[in-house]
Image (cartoon, rainbow, N blue to C red; front, side, top):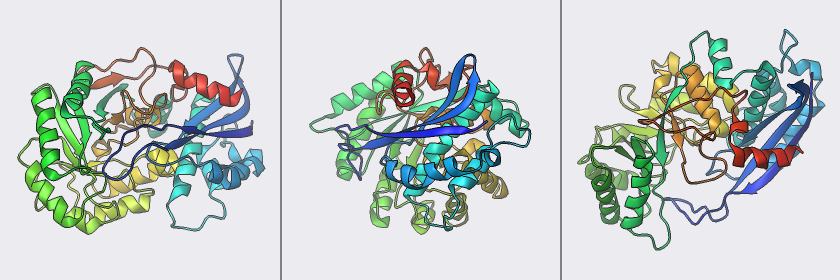
Length: 387
């Protein structure tokens, strides 16, 4: 049993949208295929993965460092003790050989992308959905019903609040009970008008979360907090720079409602520092660590251990990214839910064909692996890579 090839292709996911910090006019993502020599049901097992939006494709790092380390390793060193499957932890160790501690930047995205494909292959070899495999590994019962919220509300050129309201109405009509919009890319007065327009549109049918994408300094963060606390929001997200734990801690004095952050932290050490110094409150705040950006599920399991040691429940995690990998982790390991992009970053966002949102939740289909084969537009692109 061995990995015989690893392929990467950098794909455009460009869009005219912007948030408070960046525009997506030149955004890319890496799509990878991990090809094994294993056959299941008459087909070669191939694991697929991609990186989350907001970080660019990682083809250079994948091809120059991490791909070669896996392919050059002794194949027996990458297999589990039983010899019946690949071992994601041993493959992760092979990828990270000769990497110094720290420096959790773009390499964490490259490793996370490959790690997704490896877990997809492992679950396919086992003949099980990944979420059920993860639950078995942890000795817990998988819950296929997962909370999801709809992310959108970006700034579009020439777009007014009528279009914003229509977008959010579309999410609510599709069954979402929480919707999210961007703030910080306009004046505070304009953002207030945008927020009130959305709240008027969704009424009591859904809750609204807002996301500043790390834009604010302390003074601006406080001004927004004083404005936002007049509304009953689901959360106030990524207020300042993700590594400014002092700013995050200070916000608890000005914003009593739920806050969320963590999508741009890339290791379990970063997660530990956030919980130590960021003033996050385990009774109301949310953690958004994204395995596809932070060395993959192997590292995410270490992050969950840090949470447990710090008195946090995994149910306070709702990962960033909107991908099916985190959906599987949520269902298998008891996270609080997952982000969803119903209309953006296609074909990578969304769910397998036929999966519907019901009262803010979806039910995971019993598809082997991560379930990419159930999403026709996505798997066609993946098959092209592995052909």
